[in-house]
Length: 236
Image (tube, rainbow, N blue to C red; front, side, top):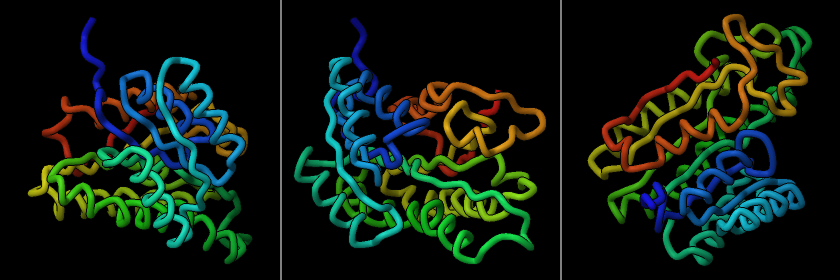
């Protein structure tokens, strides 16, 4: 039997309570990683861990709000205490608000930026010292095709995901000498609860969350060691 691709690795996956995050957590666990599932909804997070364990994987649930610096710092402390060392971070937590610019409430704009972009920054910043000390690691952020081409009536979401793409490319240059790769995945339409309110962009079709998880698995594995600073589009 071939070795599992993430054997002896640990991974933090945010927004792991449903959709893409749950699919990534399950696939990583199947491939041998110990997965720290992070979500603001503790019940959904626990359900993800139960699914991993039923399939023979190992996981832990940590409730946290990724837009809160104190929550993120606590989450990383608890994750480190649980597994000893972190190797992979998947920034997946995200929200979507739909309105044309003239109708967009400033509070909704701020919330989207806080979760999607600031959350990516906070989680990355909290995990980086460990990865830099061990001179190895993988950081994968789920952006969006909307972050590459915009999306009418979803300016906050598109702008936040464009920020994630630029943040990832910038960070990749900062940590290249530490053998840490930093990449973004840019899905089009994905068959998740968010798809009920987010239209499928032209030229895309709805793909299952596991298709995104497979790309994340490749980027988390040793096979992707020569890829960093990339924004990979996945839209069927």
